[in-house]
Image 1: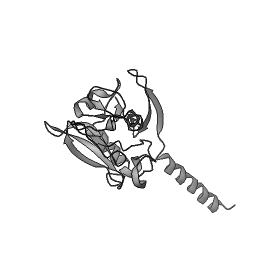
Image 2: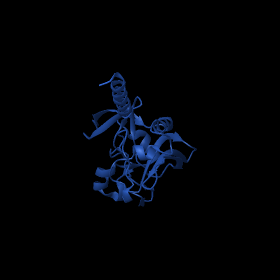
Image 3: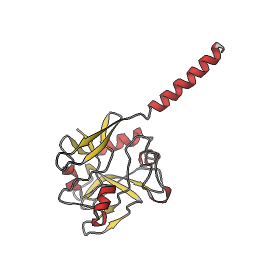
Image 4: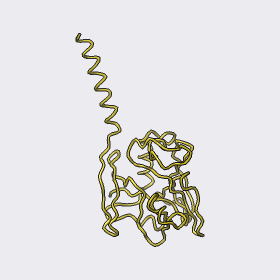
Length: 198
């Protein structure tokens, strides 16, 4: 084997390893002492996120369509005030800046949805690659009056940031696009929660 061929092969191997390493994440688990539920976690760009939607039965939270099976699948839905208090000790509701950093790390708002969505669970073949292990699921949303919408089609997550006295910022992913949208909505609406380690 010539020296040039050896260098070419070693360069290709190194490039492949660097590419793989870009997506390698530290995974773990966390047990919520309040109810004994265990959550998967993943560390992405130095931040440890729950790799599942929160499913703690805080007052003010609901299961989609009030069905326990939907809580087991998607986690619970929370109004904004409850979302800010629902994460277990040692974790907090993801901030707007933390969401922005995550989306930027995963390729920017035009591409990050595809990279962050779970590999299964999205309607109409709208699944993602789950490249970073966040496993974002489409838990839909609800309103304070009791109606529910969009499970399987959209995932909507609160951030800890207010927009004004009646609304707060969140992130939206949908089955038919690869984007992650930043938008605000009424604080009384019911959205999913992702907790980040303090």
